Amino acid sequence: MEDLISIIFPVKNEGNNVLNTLNSLISTKTNRSYEVIIVDDNSEDGCCDFLKDFKSTVPIKYIKANGIGSSQARNVGAEATKGKYLIFCDAHLFFEDYWLDKMIKPLENNLTNAVTPIISPHDNPKVKGYGQTLNMTNFRAKWNGVRTELSDTAILSGGCFAISREIFFAVGGFEKRFRVWGFEDIEFSIRMWLFGYKCSVEPSVQILHIFRKVFPYQMNANFSDYNMIRLAYSHFSEERIEKCKKFVRSQQLTNQFVEDNIKDSVLEQRALYFSKRKYDDDWFLNKFNIEF
Image 1 (tube, rainbow, N blue to C red):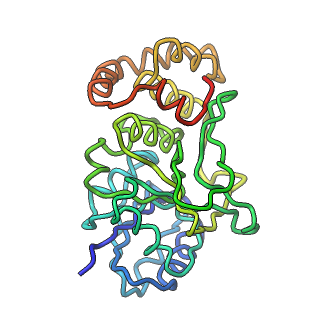
Image 2 (cartoon, rainbow, N blue to C red):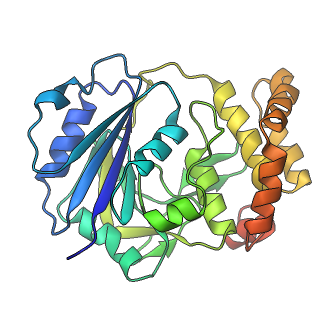
């Protein structure tokens, strides 16, 4: 019997997207057994109300969270899983037949430790992103160009990626001290590489993603910038930390972000991560030709 797969959806004010994503998921063909974990992070629009009457042969577990943020919502979902493999997905996706089978295969064959598919806009499938790398002019993720086979990627797309449950918890899951939203996927991917694990893109799988122009909940650049500073202190040299400070959009808050992170044990986390890592940040940036 093949191993169970757990698909985790963090959700917040998704409107009809959760229903549409679930309908797409359970209607696609697969030879694999899977469960669904939905973590509703204090939605206010009733986007998961339909689950009370939703009919599915696939086990669906619903968890209500109280505004814990994107990173921790994923961790809560992971804690509730029974599968050997975890797939983290946005709740606004459309799937293709046998995507699940092809996503898990590289993990089962020990070809990589985490894998992401091609991600395309739902309304323009010809546009394809093959995993991501870093644009250090603004410290943001940018899409890789065409890949024709399983290939290394600096950054996993948080919109959809698979990993074994064992490795996910071995690296510590998603960052537990991030605020609300921002840099979850970048930080997790960097940590994976520095700890000696491999992240890949599988171009035989394509997922369609709704790229929203407006977030259906309150967003604040300060959350993301705070998280960026925490990432820098967790993984980067002191010189690169200073460079990251210049990316903070409200410069008057930079020192406050640093102080708050220090109060929240980022220096202790830095020491722990440095003791665990197999490679340093120079190695990571050189491997992917990222100038920083």
